[in-house]
Image (tube, each protein chain N blue to C red):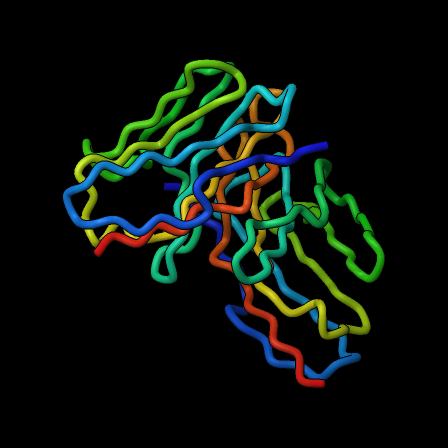
Length: 114
Length: 111
């Protein structure tokens, strides 16, 4: 079975450009999470969805960040405009049963903003 | 916000030694999860715990859900080189759907 699929694996972009990260959760999972990982701050939860609806976006750093989940099999995290401090590894994870069970992670997207 | 305190932050051991790490929370948790992350990869689930006092093993790994529901530990017996990586605890506090993570324990093994 395919796990959580993220694309791209690596993204290098110039400051000010728009960046879109993509995620396909595990089929049948109804919760989806976006995390950001940096050396300084570790794994931070940015936003999570339950049944395609955003439940908690309190971790989204600022208005430059937005996330959507148009259907049960696809989600995007967009940064516009991007800044060098956004450089990090962004992970998508999905879980069953409203998020009370274990989450399974994708391989991540390493974003570098120059 | 919700915080998990994981310790130690790093460990340097000899191959064959046993490893122990733990995680504590200021509030009651309903689940405790332990993940391992290899370089360039996402965290991979090792063990999931759902009941206070629960002790679960996965090969050489053993984890326990603390009886107070505010802590958990992970033990690795007879460490081998492939155990190298970063180990994270994670959990759901009472009534919360979001999974929060500890800061991680970086394990280095000298052959």
